[in-house]
Image (cartoon, rainbow, N blue to C red; front, side, top):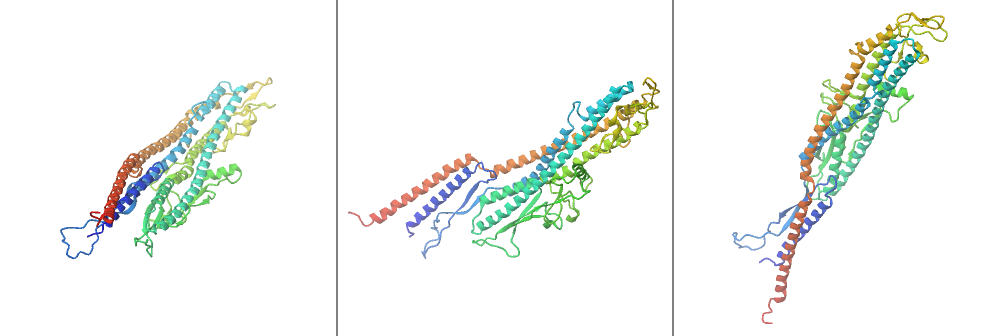
Length: 542
C-alpha cells in the first residue's frame, strides 16, 4: 500500500505548476506592449509512476502517476518567419531609404514656377527674342544679361543642392556604420550573458528576445545571415549534458568560398565595420566639392569595409566565384545614392553623380555651342569706342558648378554680340550697319535646334532629364510600396505567432486559477484524510 503522503506530493506538483503558469501568464501580460517580446509557455508532462516493492502485484492493476512536471519554458516563435522577415526587411529598408533620397532629388527640380530652370530658360530666350527686335537698346541688353545670370544661378543652385544631398547621404552612412558597430558589440555581450545563463540548464528567453530584436535591426541596416553552430573543436555542455551552440552572424549570404570573411559576430567576438577616406579620383564630384570648399570636407566621404577588408560595394573581386557582394539595407542604399554603381549585368543603379553628370553634360554642350555662335557676332561700341568688337565667349565653365558669365558680359551689356556685321557709331552716337542675325541664330539653334552632344534641343534634353529623375523616383516608390506590402504580410504572420494576445492570456488566467484552486482543494481533502488517519484512527468509542 502506498503512503497517503504520496497523494499530497501529487497535489503539490499540480499546485506548483499552476502557480508557475500563472506567473508566466502575468509576465506575458506585463510585456504585451514591449517591442520584440515573444510570449512564453510552460511545456509540461505527466510524471510517470515509479516501481515500488510489491513482488506479486498483478500487471493488470497498473500504477498511478506521480503528478506533473515542467519540461521547459518555451518562447512561441517561428524561426522560418523570423528569417523570412529579416530577409525582406533588408530589401524594404533599402528601397525605403532610396525612395526618401529620391524624393529630395525630385523636389530639387520639382518647381514649376518662374524660378525653375525651365522657367528661367524660357525667360532667357524671351529676352533674346526682344533683343532681336531692338538690338541697340541698352535696357533690353541689360535684361538679357540679367536673365542669363538667373539661369546660371538656378543651375548652380541645383548643383549645390544635389551635392548637399550627397553630403547628407555620406553623413547618414557614417552614423549608421557607428550604430551598426554598437549593435554588434551589444550582440556579443548578449551572447555572453545568454551563454552563462544557459550553462545552468535554463533557457534565457528574455535575453534571446533582445538578441532577436538586434538581429531585426541589423537586417534593416544590411543583408545578414546567421546560424547556430556547436562549439569547435571542443563541444560545450550545460549541467544537464545538453550541447550548447554559438551564434555566428555574417554580412551577406552563405555564398562563395570565402563567406567566412564576412563574419560580423562569432559568439563573444564582434567584428566591426571600418571606414577609410576616399582617395582622389574615387568620386569626381567629391573631389570637386573639396576643391570648391578649399580643402577637406568634414566628415570626409569614406568607403566602408568589413573587418576582413571586403568592401561594401556592389561587387568586389575579393569575394571570388563571381558572387555578388551586395549587402543591401540602409547602408547599401546610402552608398548607392551617394556614389551610384553598376550591377554585374550592366544595370546602372542611378545615384546623385548620375544626375550631376547629366546636368554637367547639358551645361558643357550648351555653353560650347552658345559661345560658338556668339563669338561669330559683333558687340555694340561703348565707352568712347566707335566700332564694336568680335563677340567672344558669353558663358564660361563646362560644368554646372563652374558655369558663369564671361567677364566682358559682366562688364557691359553692350558686349552681347547680336549682330553678324560690324557695328559702328556715327557722329551722333547712333549705331550703323548692325543687324540682329546672331540674336536670331541663338534663338533658333539654342532653343529649337539639336545641340551636338545632347542629340536634342536644350529644352528637350532638360525635359528628358526631368523624366529620368521622375522615372527613378517612381521606380523607387513602387519598389518601396511592394516591399512594404510583402513585409507587412510577413510581419502580420510573425506577430500572430509570437505576440501576446491579452484576450488569450486573460482566458489562461482563469484556466490556471481554476487549476490552482482545484489543486488546493485536493491538498485540503488529503489534509482532512491525514487528520482522520492521525487523530481518529484507534479512537472508536471514545
